[in-house]
Picture 1: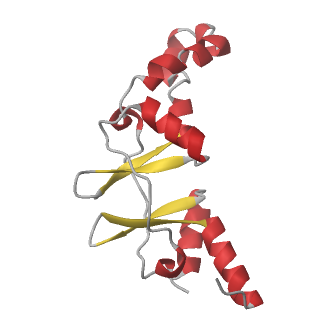
Picture 2: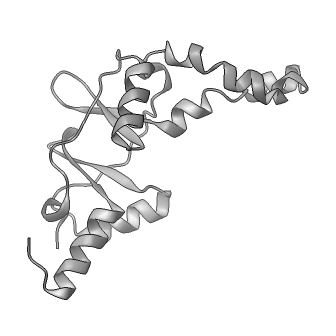
Picture 3: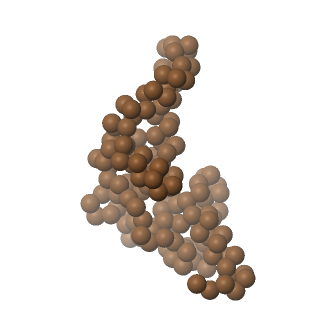
Length: 152
């Protein structure tokens, strides 16, 4: 079975100039954990996830060394969320993105996700052109249906 057989082609995406507020709203209302970041030609530039957003609330290593007591002010961290929401996607997105091809076997994709601790991975072709996304759940469901002889 190939990635193209199980991937989702209709993928929600964002641009690097979009606000984190818009991303957070999309993530929360659609119960997803992140979105691919693309340019005007739908080329994959990065990923923005709820993990990226929440990590922006945490102190940096430099902040911790400078003032270890303040760096542990968890209430202050939580209250800085409003400032994080005003930032752009490009300022928080993960730029080093792993991807798979639609022509890869699903278990190759699953092993890449397991190796890097991902639950989903973008599907690209012709370099960086985003054509879909595939999750561990998509792969598991497809194999489960095939083994039980379930057709849609």
